Image 1 (cartoon, rainbow, N blue to C red):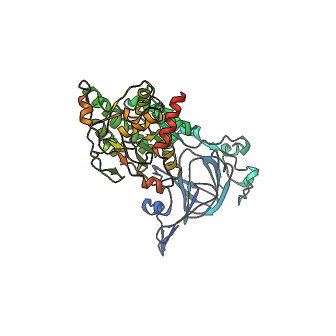
Image 2: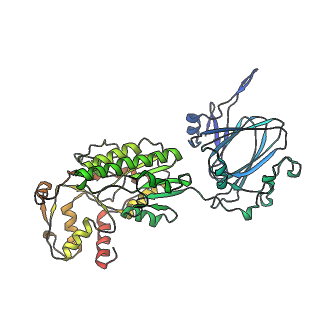
Image 3: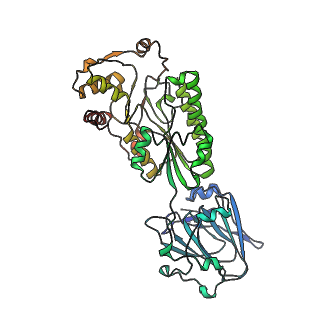
Length: 473
């Protein structure tokens, strides 16, 4: 992509290694360039990599040769004065490990080097001034995270303009290993917060290389426990942890616990994500709405009825301030363990005929499908923002779904009687009931347009109940 005011960005055979053609504005006094201009360059396709340190190396003579160093940060390299021959080798674990690129560049060119790609260069003129912006602060301790490769690696056949025996090199660079001895740099990974929960387990089953963290060792309400993860090695956080005891949240103790986890804890994750440029995927709820809209789209403003809903809406607002975020709205979650479906199936099997509310409508969401939808968003690099994900199919009341479950268990549908939410609350005078949205169904047009078609809830319900009856869930 090109822009006469801001240059162009070109791709290479190394994923993420980008060449930036800069515009030099010159007259009889000299020239001027915008070496890093966030707004223009991001529009051209350069990552918004958040530089925090600017370093400059002055090279006294032609032939100074440095590298190959694969550093634990992204950087934008350029030349302030003179010319260099640049070379880059992908040392990241993956199919392009060992792929090399070379380029001669002067002040009119910059190169974006992603972390894990080894950078090397040779000066072609005396007094060459080499400049680089990085998105992490250098410290001696961080050298342990570097990857190194010998500049003379034979398999790359790099044609250095000044032969290496004649070049000026450090003893350390001369001693770097050959490619066969290089340990590939591990790519930044994914952390699943709440990995012990029903959604967390479904995510971990599909992301075998992810790091799963959860209580009691990792607790969002305990700031000290968050330091157990090396966040510099993390690319994505999926937050599947939450305080979800909807009715208990209406009590004094529950209210405090809900705010501590769903708001204060989420705020801590947001600070971590902002500091380390991590994408944060945050799982939200239909309870952020008052349920007066029959079907909720991604643009609807929150209007929660309950304390739980208020805490989820507040957490969503914090996450929404991040540049790199996904807020995933979902509803009526069903996974392994005790839930509405397993409870109804148990009642059906014991011959009990329950009364179930018939004035709350929505769709079930099975955790396997929700997990797959989240992964789809990440793999497609979907636009950041709010996304609805639930199962598809007709909108039903809880009583309708209970009737389906009873039929699947061999009971008559009319064994389930219908009651209003108010009647159900009156039948449990010793249990404080939180207000719930009457309409919880989520519009799915946006996620479907991205290429993910959630299965129908009834189809998944039949599979789930069959597994329950076979003892597999």
